[in-house]
Every structure is written in C-alpha cells, then in structure tokens.
Amino acid sequence: MVIPSSVHELILIERELVSECTINSLNEIITSVNKEVVSQEDFLDNRYFILERKDEGYAFATELANVS
Image (cartoon, rainbow, N blue to C red; front, side, top):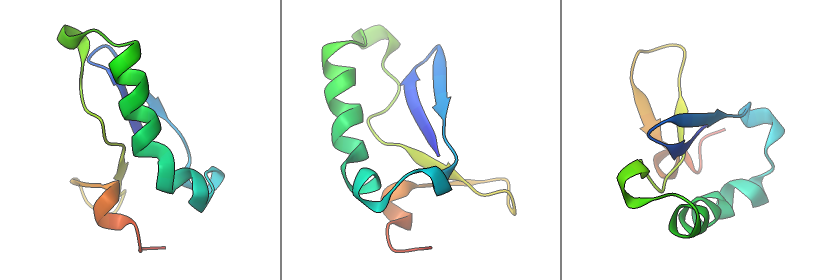
C-alpha cells in the first residue's frame, strides 16, 4: 500500500499488515491528516493506492476494496 504523505514523501506498508477495518477507514485518516498537517502546496492525494508487481500500473484502493 502506498500512502501519499505529501509531494515530498510517501509511506509504504505491506498490505498483509493492515486489517480490513483499517483499510475501510484509511482514506478518512489520510484526508484528516492532510487537512490538518499538510500544506496545500505540498498536498498530493487523499487516497491510498496499491501497486501490483505483475503490471506496471496502479489501481486506487477503492477499486480493489473487494479483491483479496
């Protein structure tokens, strides 16, 4: 999982280490932190996303919510 912290940094987490409850609320947490801590000029995105090794693209987590 890739969490956009700002245009200067990303947070990477192994998806297997994150519970389904956390996944369901992660976008809300990211939005809240971005609103309170990240300046508008450093803002990147309010969604986390998942990189798939088998292809070179990415999919936003909301598109993968029911995929195991």
